[in-house]
Image 1 (cartoon, rainbow, N blue to C red):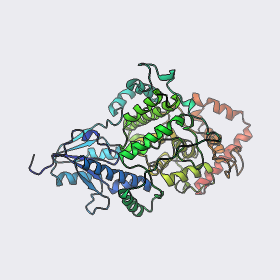
Image 2: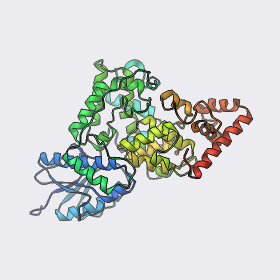
Image 3: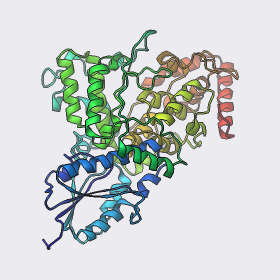
Image 4: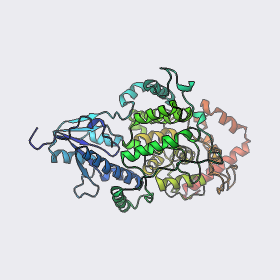
Length: 516
C-alpha cells in the first residue's frame, strides 16, 4: 500500500447505520475510512417529509460519532458543504481519489435505483460488494424459494422462516399453540375503556436541534411538520423505545393491532420500523425478545405471533419480492388505474373523518400504522382508481420508515393489487363498514357510514360497489370474492345502477380537483 494511502473506503448509507454492517465487519480503524454523505440526490428523488429527512440526517451524524468513538476515522459530508458532490456515486469517486484508497467495500443497498448507479461505478480500484445479512433471507435464498412459481404466498414463506429459526416453535414442524397464524385473533375493536402506554419520547439533543433547524429552512416547501420531533436517532434510544414496547405494548398488540382511534396515533404499536429500517435495531435480537416474552408468559401467543409475523414474514417477504422483480415491478398496473392523487392527500383537508385523521396524523408525525395505511388511505386509493405510482410516491415521501424495498411491494400488491395477485391472493378493500368496526372515526363525520346513496353517504360505500362492478370481469371468479358478487347480485338492478352513478359522480369530482 502506498505511503499515506487508505486501505479501504467504506461508504455507509443512511439506512445502513449498524456497526455490524457486512462491509464493516473486517474493518481496521488503523487503515480504513468510513464515509457518510448527505447528498441532494437522496433528498430530491421524492418530496420527503421533513421529519424523515431530519431523522435520517441526525441518525447518520450520531452514527458517525459512534464510530469515531470506536476508533474509526469517519469522513462526513453535510448537505450544505460547498464541496458536496451531489450524489452518493460521485462522493465515492471523490473520496476514493482524495484518500488514495486501494479498495472500496459496499453493502447491498435498500433501493434498486441506487444500487444500479453504484454497480455502474467506474473506479480505478477494486469495488467489493457484501450481502446485507441484517436480513434473515438473502436475495439469492429468496430467489431459490420463489423458483418459477406463477404466484407467491406469504404463509408458505413465513412457515419456512419459523421452522428455520425455531421462533415460537415446540418442535421442528410444530408451532406453539398448534396454529401457524393467529390473524383472526388480531382484529378486535378497542373497548370503550382502554389505556394505552405512554409513548416513548427522545428530546432532541444539540446535534438533532441543529439538523432540525437546517431541515426546517432547507425543506420548508415540503409537506409535513417538524414541530415536536422526538423520535430516537441513536442506538441507545432506539433500544429504549423497543424495551418500552416489550414491557407495555406487546401484550395488547395482538388483540388491537388493527384498531384505530381519533387522537391516538400509536395505541399498542411499537413504532420501531424506522429505527429498524435504518439499522439502529437488530432484527434477530427483536425476534429473540418476542420469542422469550411468550415463553416466559409475559405476552399472549396471538401478540407474539402477530408481531413475529410482521418481522420475519411480511418484512422479509416483500423485500424478497422487490429484489426478485425489480425494475418492472414498479411499473405494474394490471387494473389500469390512471387517476391523479387528490390534493387532500398532501393537506388532509377533506370531510371524510377517517382520511382527515389518518392524513393529518401522517403530516404531523410522518407515522401511521399499517391499517391506517392499508385500509384507509390505501383503500380509498384503490377504490378511486388512483395510479399506483402516484400513491406509491406519496407513501415513499410521507412516512419516516419508508424505503422503496418495503414501500413499493406493499403499495403495488397489498394496496393497489397492481401486480394482479402475484404477491397476494386478492385485493384488500372494504366499505366504510370496516372502518366503522375498527375505529371511532365515523362518529361525528360529515358523511353517514350507514348510507351508500345520497350526498351525505360515506364515499367509501358507493366506491366499494363501483369497484366491484367495474372490475367484475377480473374478480368475479376469484374464490375469495365470489360471495361479494353474490351480495351485489342480490341487490335490485335499480339500486346497482344508482350505486354505479353515485360512484361515477364521486370520481368525477376527484377528476375536477374537488375535495370530498
